[in-house]
Length: 118
Image 1 (tube, one colour):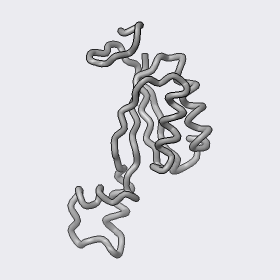
Image 2 (image 1 turned 30 degrees about the horizontal axis):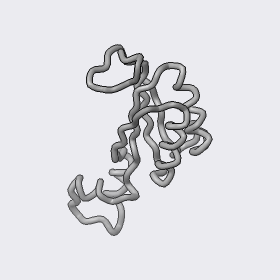
Image 3 (image 1 turned 60 degrees about the horizontal axis):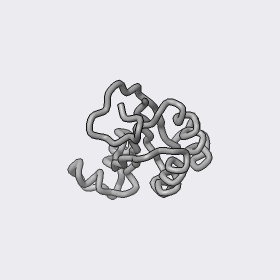
């Protein structure tokens, strides 16, 4: 079992990515609004930005946010998930597309994973 974390730059692609993940067998995804340090720093340097913006004000601006998707999948699904994602986003190796990484998961408590729950 692996945890897949995908930080999607273009929030307009979110629904399409979620449909593609579901089509390859992903059973559930947690979606978070997120923003990187580079975007926050750039927003604070804009001409139309308030002199002392709060972090909340900066993060509320839609153009500053990414979407971070988190899901638990079996190891066999990861390659199909990456392929399906790149069919929508283009190569993740290009700048400003997104970042996807996986982490091994040894134990899961509190999540329904189907008949082969760990």
